[in-house]
Image 1 (cartoon, rainbow, N blue to C red):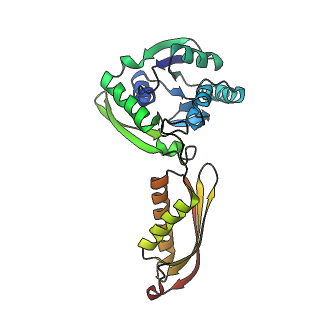
Image 2 (cartoon, rainbow, N blue to C red; image 1 turned 45 degrees about the vertical axis):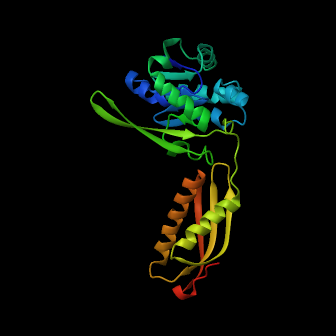
Image 3 (cartoon, rainbow, N blue to C red; image 1 turned 135 degrees about the vertical axis):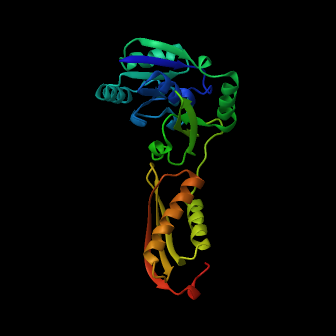
Length: 275
């Protein structure tokens, strides 16, 4: 097993550059901020970006918790990749991670300055300090549940390798310990958003009851409605489910696990309530 390291100061674009570096060097897996990433998926670990404080994030990234460390240790042995890239802010950090996970000596240590320009690092620094954005080198759908409510956005980059264009998707999150501070979104905001979506359509005559259940990894929205009579009322309800889920996820970044719509009755269009 060949072990590589990518080292650079916080906010210099290491995670952003990691997938491209792995492609160029045929590195199969990544250890970044407490996560073991392979096959374009998070296979094990706890993300440092989910911690409430900077100190907590550092401890998680360094695998100081025995249970966390052990789970990643065994998953690496199970997957047995031919090569792993460890990402860290210093030589000391990547060395501690390597030792705690009992991995072989480094094949190569790469500095972020060797693979990025000064302008690229300045852009990354601005994204981190002014906007509180952090990159995780996996597609958004892979982390949507874990980062429900953390402003997850897809970031697609098209790069050429060996004459081929390759689409690489990374995910941008704003962690709890972001420079911009904490935030919360109340259930009422979500209900108001759902009510707006329902009212602007032509499928629902009246909303009888609505509610939100939060499961940590996502939310479930429950609606009891009177639908406007149409031959396609079932397909209209299904379409409404998709429309609500898309809007709520886009506006709040919550992972919507389910939209339950209970149809209590049907009315003609003339009976529609604007309440």
